[in-house]
Amino acid sequence: MDSTSREHQFLERLERHKGILYKVANVYCGDREDRADLIQEIIIQLWRSFDRFDGRAQFSTWMHRVALNVAISFHRGTTRNRRKTLPIEDFELDLGAADRQLESEGDDIRRLYQLIGQLDDINKAIILLYLDGHGHDDIAEAIGITTTNVATRINRIKQKLQREFDAGEGTKGKQS
Image (cartoon, rainbow, N blue to C red; front, side):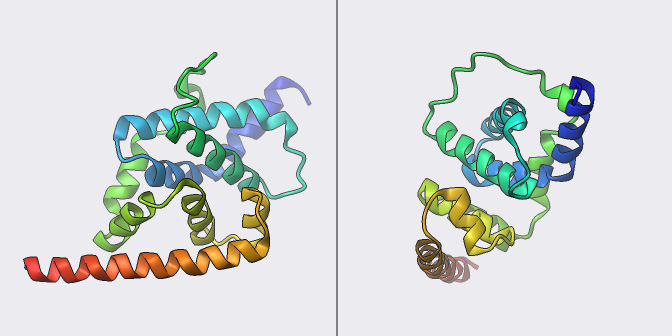
């Protein structure tokens, strides 16, 4: 495949699945500038590894895996020293869209993102994939743990989020 068609194929798939970028950035970064930096870093890593995408998994599953790995590393501060940058404008993404997506959500969804943001990195990744409709097997493959472990973690995460959400609702009701 020549470089022009390879780039076109990458950009087309990136455009189709850009919501993944926004969701990952919104869960892993509370600050607007950090979200933009993370989205750019994910795109760079996706582009660098695009040649290795072999189609055994769906593109969205592969993209989630790369995005989550980058987010976890970024969150730990290990990817901030970039060797090479690509102009984000080349990808025709509106980085403000992550902010607008978050702002357009209802209070309950924003609260859910906030609670998910408080989870450890692996549990954030698991619940994000789960909420995006991925099955236990796909999540296990993307995260590198067993399917049973995924099921157990999802159940525990859901219970924890429900408790914390309910506790926040009780606090909100007292303030009104």
